[in-house]
Image 1: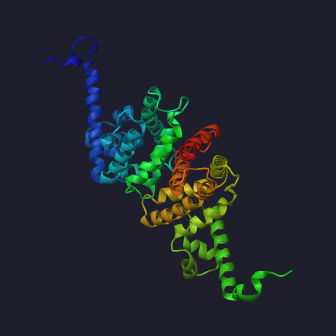
Image 2: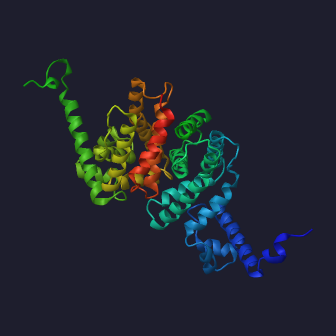
Length: 199
Length: 199
């Protein structure tokens, strides 16, 4: 069996490979620290100790505690689906329902609530959160980009504005303890957005 | 000149009048405490001292510090317009733009950010915030209720879901320091909602 990544021009250098392993080990350690000590006990120091790594190694990849935390959060949120069913309404609906479920049923909801709270008094966290949420809107916007290319939604629709409306709706539910919103209501909210942009 | 409120069956009792004056004095005191000491220095004790009132008097009207704070916040937010132009798009757009401006240009934005942050770790604040935001969605929903009665939007449209989408969009801008969003983008977001529900 040939592993394509280890031969020919695509081969990664030993150094790069070590870096990736070490980054992975740091993320793993960060996840453990978070689940054992919670948001309050989470610090670069604690992660460095757990990973047996130096703080400079951590700061090489993550400029701040929040940046690292957001990576751990994103990693735990892997089960959120970004479907591609061929229907923009289905894609958005399934995405929203799976996001609500993840937040409700895993620690990700509380992690993200803590980050949102911290961002209201700490400018560094605000910056990290802004960069993160901008990237997520870009990602969610792919649902609209695909619908545009299918001619399903109006030309000129800005995918980021639609993604912003959808993710804002999810955020406010997280913030006010409404993650058990019934699916029919979520469906109606998604329909308003989708009818608002359809070709 | 006859003041209808002071004669006949509609006359308020002296007691009720005193209560209202005292509630007003407490709100006034609360506002002063907040602007001098900020969110961190705001407490029922400090307000009671400033208003020369007993804590039980305050608790008679406001069950918690956050409930009082939300009333002060709402009082300072008086300049947000709830227009009635005859067009649902204009009403929603003008409301959003004035809300963004109020948050950006007065202390109301930071007060509300603090409340949102506090609600993420303190259940009493979460409950007060939930009740408050539910009432605000009801209020903003009046824009849609009027449009329904004009036949401007689809029968069966749920005003609270539209209000939820609109206010969530505003919240996420407040939380990620995007209150300087340009008006054309806000206009596009409002149009998506309005096109999504029009008859």
